[in-house]
Amino acid sequence: MFSPAAQAMAERLGLTLGRANVDEFAATLEQLGRTDPNLLVVTSDSRGSGKLAPFGQALPRQLVEVGIAEQNLVGITAGLAACGKKPFGVSPSCFLTARALEQIKNDVCYSDVPAVLVGLSAGVSYGALGTTHHSLHDLAVLRAIHNLAIIVPADNLETREAVRFAAAAARPVFLRLGKAPLFDLHAPGTRFAAGQAITLRDGGEVALIATGETVIHALLAAARLAERGLAARVLSLHTIKPLDTEAVLKAGRECRAVITVEEHLVHGGLGEACAAVLLQAGVSKPFRIVGIPDEETVTGSQADIFRHYGVSMEGLSELAVSLFTVA
Amino acid sequence: MTLSDVELQLKAIALRRGMLRLIVHAGAGHIGGGLSCMDILNVLYNRVLQVSPETFAEPEHDRYVQSKGHCVEALYAVLADRGFFPSSDLNTVCRYQSPYVGHPTRHIPGIEMNTGALGHGLPICVGMALAGKREGAAYRVFTLLGDGELAEGSNWEAALAAAHYQLDNLTAILDHNSLQITGPTREVMSHEPLADKWRAFGWSVRTVNGHDYAELTRALSDPPAPGQPTFVLANTVKGKGVSFMENLASWHHRVPSEAELTAALTELAAAERRLRATP
Ligand SMILES: [Mg+2]
Figure: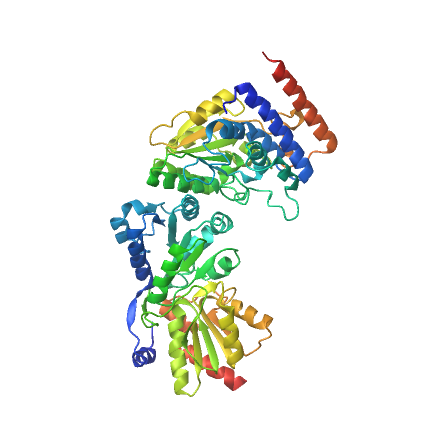
């Protein structure tokens, strides 16, 4: 996932490697499920991808398998939620948010049932499996649906807290998870609240507003920029909706430039959400959206794809420097 | 509140009358399918479903999800008659800022889920029936499907799951009027033999005349085959009860003129007189 230089930087920052968010999700869910018999998991032959086989073994009455049928997965999840259950419908994000989008829109969000949908192996987590398995559209389409909280955790702590939030939520929630082991970004006990960005590093030159598995790259880039005398602010904007507009505006007003970073197409995701907030408030600063461009995605692992499109310590720090050089 | 067949049939005439007036007043609605499923809804809400305005919020009540959501006017008429909300509310259907949208929504008392896109009701009901099974709850779950709707693949995903989980607390009713918006269903996308298909999917199938109160009552009330979901194949007539609307796809969502409304109401009045004259 990281270049040797980035790896060395992570070590200098004292970061330690945690597990994959999907593992943290499964463990948290099992923990919650043991004390809440109403908590159910609904899978579409996806308990392997969701690391939920132990959940199914420990709590067989709380797992519903629907087979490879995502529309049915979401409809059933909605029906369970309407009848007093707390279901987590779990399926790869590429299938869940494309094939079953109408069920998400109508059965879950419009009907307003307390269901949780979990998009697994999101973004380009599946790497070289290619475009059928990438979900670079999910944030865009889900942002355009009313009544859905969208959370993209950046590390295990954010995942744990997001799962707890979702389990207690009275309204629909979507969690977007990847499957690569991640560095722990937050000290234990860091406060997580849905809808509130977490500031990982303060600075007034450039704001790096990132989400999900790209946050670590923004943090490493900020550390490298500091070595060059540029103070970068890093925000983990884990909740895409409702967006923490206050944090985005503050970053836009206080910093000389803004770069957003996401594992998503550059259209319709975090970047455009931030741009809309800033521009409508009259905040106009040099602004760049880093993500996957609108082209057939290059073949490679998630790390290859990130590096190719500049989602890396090197790519992001060079982009930041170029903004000031041009300006 | 036990109504005889004749009393229910008289109620059906009043419900059809109310629905026609509602659609003309709203200037919109699905009249042909509403008339074809009205007797089914009448039997459900007045004989079968264990639900009332008082018990609707309780966990144990029977669930009904109208998968063919476009025929909401028939459902509105039945729910108003059952006292879920005042009939006068129906003057606002489809009007600016009214909660009475042209498809079912949970803002309306008595409505379980928001429907309107086809192929959604059955998966939702599988979830509801599963919740009941896992709870050990006694409630039953019903959905009403249109026959054109069966072309949606999600129905067949749910059909598999219902049999897999042995959901004998689930009943899917097919309003089999053999027409859809474009024309005869067998021409648009043929799906016969339906009874064989549902049996092959593991369901217990009951074929009835969807306008016969005794047959509908038996099919919807008799205990299920243990471990099997029930499919009630209700053969119906699109536009049932108004001769010039019957069996015409063109009445799918046409709004009657004042003259057509008068003619339709005259026919219903005559039917009512005949029924009352029957010993
Ligand atoms: Mg039909």
